[in-house]
Image (tube, rainbow, N blue to C red; front, side, top):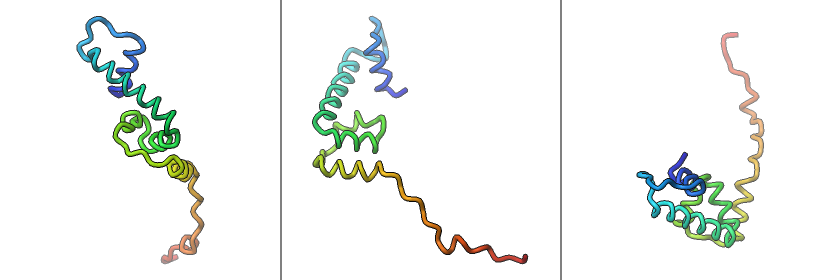
Amino acid sequence: MSLYGDMMNRYHVGVSDYDPHYTAYDIAQVSAIHRNWVRFQETYPHNAALLRILFGGSAKEVHMEVKVIPEEKARVVVQLLRERPKEAETRRVDNLLPMGDS
């Protein structure tokens, strides 16, 4: 589990009075990142989808550093990336049998 995921789990489950690994500041910082990510998703839904495609689980942290592109462009890129690639056509070379001593 990543540090972020572990901290969010501790945040939602509850933190003991003494936790040497994570301070209240760490948990507040993770909570702030989460709130910013939720706002980013509401404001720029296609940019958020693009970040999820490109960065997966790290999209939440990455969104703070990216330059937002227009939503229409982000929508087109998301559509292109989500489309299945076409099956490769059989080339003429693929039909040739290897030459040998047989």
